[in-house]
Length: 280
Image 1 (cartoon, rainbow, N blue to C red):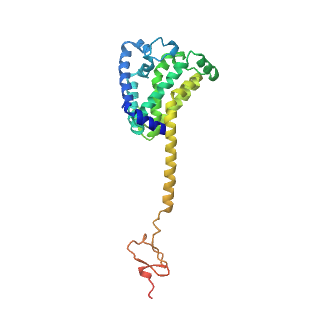
Image 2 (cartoon, rainbow, N blue to C red; image 1 turned 90 degrees about the vertical axis):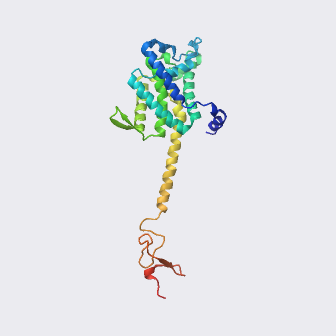
């Protein structure tokens, strides 16, 4: 984290506040264009670098392709993404959230750079994985799901930061965020089981969460453990209702059981209440 602190001090002024909000804004424009010309999406998708043919705008434009075709689903996804953005930016800060977005983009670039090269083929042979979107079957589905991977990263980090936030599924069923995150994780696992070569792309696509969210979750666990141990020690050392700072050696009453009672201590160190003080 010290490295991130140094980078933030040096480059933090260049961070874009609400970056994910801008991404969603342009996704809205692309979503509207797709209703008029669905083929337009093919001009935005990330392709292997060896097939880029000078179309370098694809290095960023793939982030603007929405992950849903249904207007209702898209609006709901955008709404959830904005909630995640505000929570994460408030916790991480603008600079770290920008790094989070950049980390996802770099992971996609890595797959695009390896695809179609000797190094990429070696990785594919060694891992049995495909590294590039345009090599997957049902290419249109995966193209739309690049944004899905990105928003899943956001949602998983959001689930770490605010696991007990409640969303109304279909406006009826209340579900906590951590439950929804587990359901998303289950979907990813089922996707990989259904198409095993997807595993490496899934790991790379979830790298931002693995590098930002997992350490954050571990810190939360350590903090919760320390707080729990301090609370246990405090309760163990606290006076109960039956205990008290003063206790009469004769009747056993304390200042806790009888707050109006006066106590005295003799020269021998023996404590008495006002009712049982020695007469001489």
